Length: 343
Ligand SMILES: *Cc1c(COP(=O)(O)O)cnc(C)c1O
Image (tube, rainbow, N blue to C red; front, side, top):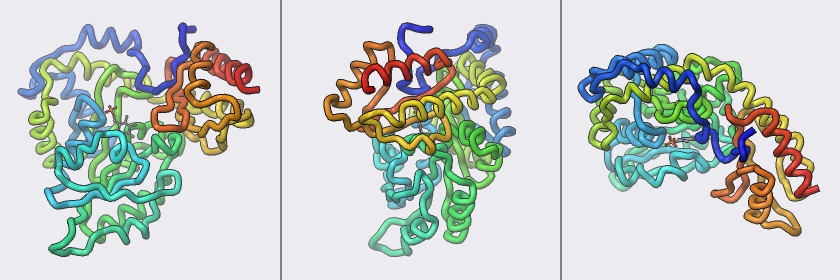
């Protein structure tokens, strides 16, 4: 067991031995010129897995979402987003900065927006107001404790998008977690969206990178936007090689993370100060409000750290994220620490 059991995020996962080997041996070329065979292999692999025409490897999930909004919208447009979504809260407002469009946040039930409310928020054409051109759905929903958005909900929103000629984007940073928890292939989620992005750098444990998918003309233009944002990388097959290993070897093990997250959630749910319904934990993220008579959140986090447990509370509630580098021993250590500090 490491010095710290690091529950801060699944982005802390370090590359596996096989990834490092693949990186060392990767055949590379200048990807801006389209010459990197390893990047080309990753992109065609992802397009196939997602059942979309084309894919683009980008440095981060934030860049994937920024490019997507830029490509699907024009200035004076508006984008419907879920109120607690990453794209609205955690990406430093690239919508206004890069695409120069406005977000319109809508509340949800654990990440699932009411399709009727989505429809009510689509703007009627008018010289006074923006034009609604894109709807974004996040699945799994990070700030809703890794909730899986039900596919019927996505289907209903797709129908509304079609009726109004609006694009639908899925921020699927953790779409493989959603797929494992629901038993629905990622292809089925992707089929309901015009575009989808996911992160290789989270639970799938690659060191860097995200991939976006969509129709060929969307990806062609996205490639130009990536370049202008400074995201054109050269012999980046070195990194893409780890992404290929992530897809080949790291997808199926996500279910272990989900089991361990449930185990931890059920073990801590009854403790003083913790407001958590463990039945809500479907994937690898546990978020709970902390309200203790003697301990503030920062005090609690520093006591956890003394016991070797790292967690984050940057947005208020405390977050525990389970990933490849969290094993059974780390779960036991966390449960002991919670009991020692709170019971
Ligand atoms: C992490 C995350 C992103 C952004 O990915 P980065 O690679 O950190 O930029 C986007 N959406 C969701 C839901 C995320 O969890």
